[in-house]
Length: 399
Image (cartoon, rainbow, N blue to C red; front, side, top):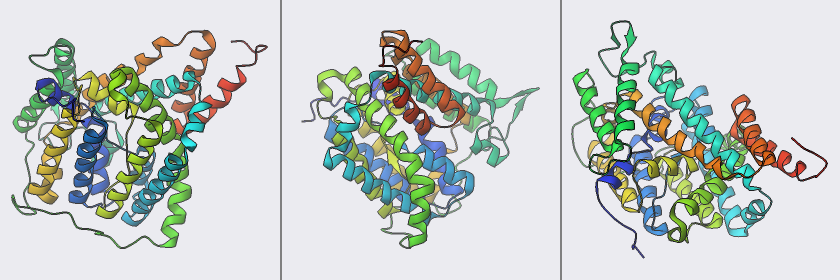
């Protein structure tokens, strides 16, 4: 155990690779939905640390995006979000312990898994570009492309586009550089740029201190909260979680880490996410999962061991404990366009997994999932892809 832990520049850079997917939803769910910032980031940190130590390789931690996006768009209450965390935890625990996930895996063709990975990658690229040009939901809610910078334009061009272009070029130049890892240089450069252009750490809610998360900071959800969460949040989220956070994630982990990922199984991943959501429920945080996109991000920027999990986990833990509610202000020092760059390159890495598909039918299934996902969502894309893939096993059908 703990054979695969390293601490070096590449692990530091890789640990930062998925901030573009994690921070915007986390920050928005604190600002819009009123979740507890200390409990939210404390639960994220513990999930990073414990899952990394247990699986002994790089393990991603991500928000559940269907729940997060709907909660932010409709300004759901903390009780409704916490109800979804508890229900997701229960469903995942049952699916993992009973082995039902293995049955799902048995009937899921590789073309469907690749389609989920392709779709997730495309959504990451799209989301990253929106961060750069200032059209993401979070930026629209803030009514600014770079809400925390005092400079919004360089001449006629939005400042985020300028930062994004420069950051993208730097990333291309350093992407495989082990001396100056791209992820580390881009994030540090982003923080410096943010400070130069007017971003500041607001300590209005108290200075540095020692902040312990509160157990059950919100009242226990009522029956109506659970009913709403089940139909509006959990049922739409489950297919996406099964497709991306379990099947596509475990497949990608095996591809990246080979025999080192022996502990990463569909059942254990389900149980890992279930326990994380029980923790998040108790601390007033958001629903959490693993995910193929997160793994692609960490891996592409240099993470190869559980050291990356310990680095980002303890960094977030220290920030949560010392800054308390001011932790949001610290993350706001990083321009949105820098998060966009991380998303774009992570998404591109993930889309390339379709290169091992072998025939037209498999490519057809993957691209159909992509099209359906873009037209609706990944949960619908996953279900439709399963149907299409099994129909195309009939020899009389061709594409």
